[in-house]
Length: 111
Image 1: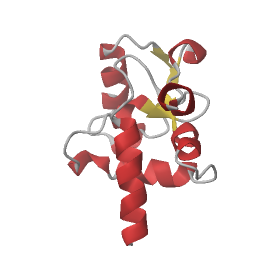
Image 2: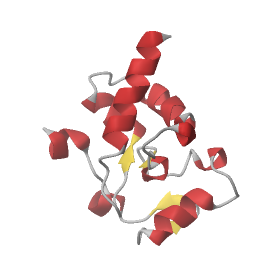
Image 3: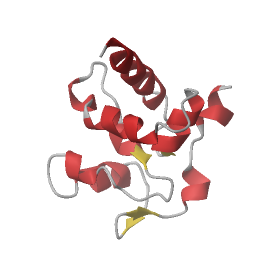
């Protein structure tokens, strides 16, 4: 369990660096952390992030196609979408528009 906690902490550290108005994917975080096949684990970390201090902007982490796959883990029906739209991100049918323009890749940004 300790190893999972450590991985989750690393995921939270990366997620906290995602700039306002940008998004990344579960897989991009996993790849950055050297665990390319662990995108689902990143998703579990995001699902468990609400209690973290400082706050983790989990709404900025989506699937590789820009789909809000984690939205059912947020309070309220459209909270994830509302949080993204408050940052100027356009979401149509649960999918981020212009993903390539606003995508933040930790490998490029943090290396």
